[in-house]
Length: 480
Image (cartoon, rainbow, N blue to C red; front, side):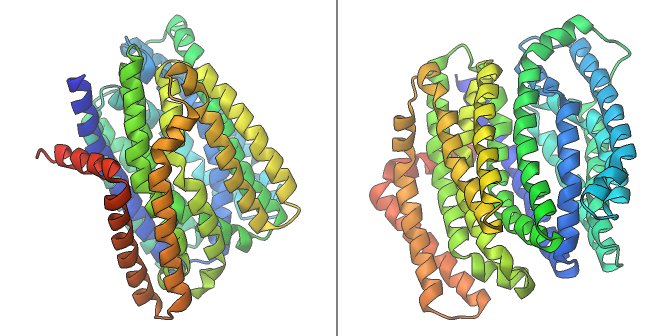
């Protein structure tokens, strides 16, 4: 157990550094571009990425995940996955190339067509990148991922700001995504040293596909429903409203996904190594739940409480409409670490069929709420999405009662102290905003300091065991 524990901790360090570094640069870039560009530009880009995200799911086909989960992979497996993914990418690129005019016509926006044709190049670059990442994650070489992604995000951010200042509008964002993918792929090629060979095995592919297609279908359902929200908002509301909705959602998403994506990247290969020791696996899931929510709850609820001060300070008053969407999204993303730990435990045990079944049930709920709420207004669409997140969490937790003897009641009991303390802390921060009227920068500073003091004090008094667990994990990671 110790080698696995040590590997997980070292991997976490590099993944957190990579996620916080890249998301930090991206967040700073978003703040800079928000002052230069207009909400309509962000709305247009959100629609473009919706189609790219869906196509990317088909290209991955769940096969990179199958490479990570499989115990005995070799060069033939990796090359076979690459060639079939490349074929799918070419077909997807051609479909978007010729379908761009129809998509633009559907959304009544002629700017969509040229943007979609250019940004679709990411699909071809992504094939090589996805197999590189699977090779690296399989060996848990996350230091190399850190170097590649940091390089990509810095270079692409610099170019994007220059283009925005020169009046390129939405094209500054489009080129940023493409350049990022190019740089990441080139740097990984240098560090990972994996290249496809002229070999292919349909038999090997079938074995991987038996696990991978369920991962693909799960990812497809998740991605499609997320992007359906974007396309529905883009169709039924104005592009400016879509830009405000997307920006309000993106800020907490950036904060949450910085943490949860790091968690998922490391937990899946780690849980796969523990698939034959369910007692140890339960212990890791339990520890992950307690530590992750101890950190995530105050971040998300505190961000919601300080949303007005933050938006007016860093995005200016023209984005004031994003405040309410930011606050609702904070509730949505606060529970993501629990989703990730439970899903990765299921996948780590090789039960991608259960993960797929759960995803289908969650998306039926999701789409039902969307179909209902869209008739009441954009705020109700956001509220419906937040409510479905709670139902989805229950669906994700259920199987682990049987598989790991870790019930929903036990999981909620583990996180309840952190949840209650975070809510109290957010209430204090919000009331400061209501009763005192400082300039935004001072108000934000007062709220953050007060929140930190209140959360730390209440945690020491009422949640000391989890606080001790977090401190011990940090000290061990630092070698103390």
